[in-house]
Image (tube, rainbow, N blue to C red):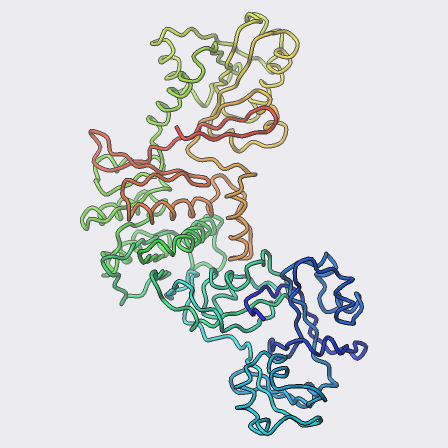
Amino acid sequence: MNLLRLSAITLALFASASFSLSASVKELPIKSINGKSYYYYDVPAKETVYSLCHKLGVSKEDIIKYNPSVADGLKSGMTLFFPVAAEEGESDNSVTGTNGSRIITHRVEKGQTIYGIATKYGISTEMLIKQNPIVREGLKAGQELHISIPGSTPQNSAASTSISGQTTNVSNTSDKSSVTGYLVKKKETFYSIAQAHGLTVSQLEAANPNVSILKEGQVLNIPSPESFLAENTTVETDTLATDSLKAPADVLSIAVILPFMLNEENPSKNAQRYTEFYKGMLLAVDSLRNNGTPIHLSAYDSEGSLSKVKEILSKPEMKTNRIIVAPDNATNLAAIGEFGKNNGIKVFNTFVVKDESYTHNLDMMQGNLPSPEMYRKAIDAYTDRLAYSHPVFVSMSGAAGDKTDFVNELKQNLTAKGIKYSDITVDARLTPAELKQLPANDSYTFIPTSAKQSDLNKIMPGIIEWRDNDMTGTVKLFGYPEWTTFRGETLTNMQNLNTLVYSRFYTDDDNTRASALENKFKQWYGTNMENAVPRQGLLGFDTGMFLIKYLKYPSARYDGIQNGYSFVSPDGVEGWYNDVLYLVNFRPGGLIEKVNL
């Protein structure tokens, strides 16, 4: 019996006088879970509830009673559990051993064999004989055997991947033959269970390959930590760091200094977002654990204080890092940047968008495409793709557009290239009558001078109505990063108008990579990522994925779930900045395309 198969069915852990075990159930093997013994049955492919009831001699109601998820359908890979009946003596005659094992008194029935009994209780024949030497002389009906079933007492754990000041050593998996069962308690997560048993989430997932969402009462296979032997890769995550830690020179060492605000009883929303960012990085480390080179990730709480940052930087192990992810405070960033410059350590800045220290610090990495370069790339994308289409700038009367800088630069570029454009000013709401001045057989691209959703909603309906009723040409809309956050009717109209939007980051809600990471995040941490823009969990994951690859291959380019990274250092710039900009096309019919410019 393969003990690594999924044990994913909810268990009812109480005795029931009304449930009478059939002879077929009594022939099933037994597993000890949380100090109690259960018959278990692995559901094969194409098994049906009807055939199962017939095979085991039990009713559908009894199966569902002890395995509630069967009510949703029987699936291949499920493991069904039935409590060992009191009539077999467990309740009265079983005891718990010092190592968490369960010692059961078994009465030998006529026709039973040593092999059959050993298999029944999930132990070897050698172990059964060792525990009961008398059976060497042969079994006799009515004979009592004392059988010790390995228990599922959690292993002591000296490891943690939360922000707690401890260190976790994670290795590749090899031998997973030592497995016990564990009953999931209310509000437990993959992350908390793995931590309690001295495992990584990946090791726990590998032992339970078909489990997606945990529920109270489910049973998980818990592999012994000793069964995971180091082969090629060791991943260490030291959260909040220990003073004695010294990373080897060939380790991919990354430090994260962020205001987690662990000293606050109720951390602010910002602190929670930085924690989510770090959690995303942990998922990246887990994803790349088999990269061939050890990874060392450490996290420090800056507490939003310059003095605390200086205290962290004074730690000897800080000089062993190859990259430091810096916080959102410009003053703290400057201190870390200077430390990086003096010690040859790269400083990754993804939170201070307007910081320009990368221009004079060769070790500074600006994770955001600078605004002047963003405008240049967006305008180049516009003229490359929409040169055939007549530009129409739409402004709201009495209000200065919040995209004046971009609009002015785009107009200058159009003029330099000899491309004529039109301006329309709208009093309250754009109407088809105001567009009739435009020839009906031409192609147009409308560019609002405001990125506000309220202004956009005053413009799009009029364009759509004019296009559908009065013209024979084509229409597009060109817009801004803020538009990627719009949903509902606004998004529907954007798709109707085949809208193009430039943005430093973007993730499609229906993206399969994003969905998979969302599910994994929930498995690890028990909560969903915050629904914000950008999503900090995705940002942390993409950042971690890029930085780990960058440390091995400095010229690496990474196109992530939400963010992309490709660093350049042009003439006149000592440091580095991220050169990635996306052009997102919201097309009719709901299709969304993201192009890396």
